[in-house]
Amino acid sequence: MISLKIFDDPENLGAALAEELLDGAASAEREGRAYVIGCPSGRSLKPTYRAFASMASERRANFSNLHIALMDEFVERTATGWQWIPADRHCSCIGFARREIIDPLNEHLPVSHKVPAANILAPPPGNPVAFERRIEMLGGIDLFLLASGTTDGHVAFNPPGTRRESETRIIELAETTRCDSRLSFPELASTGAVPSHGVSVGLGTIKRFSRETVLVMTGEDKAHSLVKIAALERFDTNWPASIIHCLPPGRVMVDKELAGTACAMLTARPFQ
Image 1 (cartoon, rainbow, N blue to C red):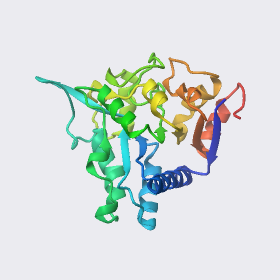
Image 2: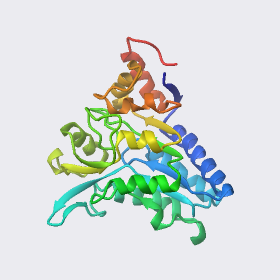
Image 3: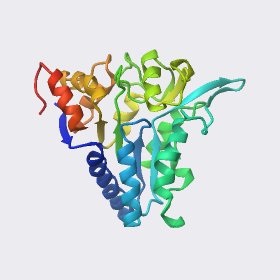
């Protein structure tokens, strides 16, 4: 059974999760090892990333051993094969990570404490499984932050129908996933402007390499996803975000607005 924690608003949720990240990074620094965070792009984790950067600046955190593992990136086919879209495109997940995570983290830190450029990891389209080998060499992902698609419950680019054991791979995006991407990247003129393919971690990648995971959802438009997950007792391939049932301790963090909307919709069992 999932464990649900409700916060007054996304900012309070983000601050609590940022505290966890800072504590984890500090503990890893004392132990002399890498600290690896799995990070999605999109709306749900923005308050967490903002709080993380703000607290890191206040505490003069040392992120020289911090690694940021990105979940996915849009790709396009070229004469030489699949390639990431340019990072300066509005919808680039790598560009999002630089703007929303890396640059704010590094802005007020001394050079010796910044996140090194080499510590930003994204699945390479030419050899996606190499991403998994890199994660394994680092000792796994300490905390994987997850988000759920609004319309179809996708996690990273994994669409409905994805196997629980799926690996990092090139994926043709579901139309519902492309529609959701417009919410994350509003400058896109239409769903047709969203790239049709992406390279993404698999659900099995998350399960195999994560020491801990947390699913974060905020805003009343995520209520349908929360209701779906709460109503399930186990992973359902038709709703990828239900993978949280396979990821001890099964933590889900939401804001009060979302919880209120979801509770009004629920007719089945309560959360525990």
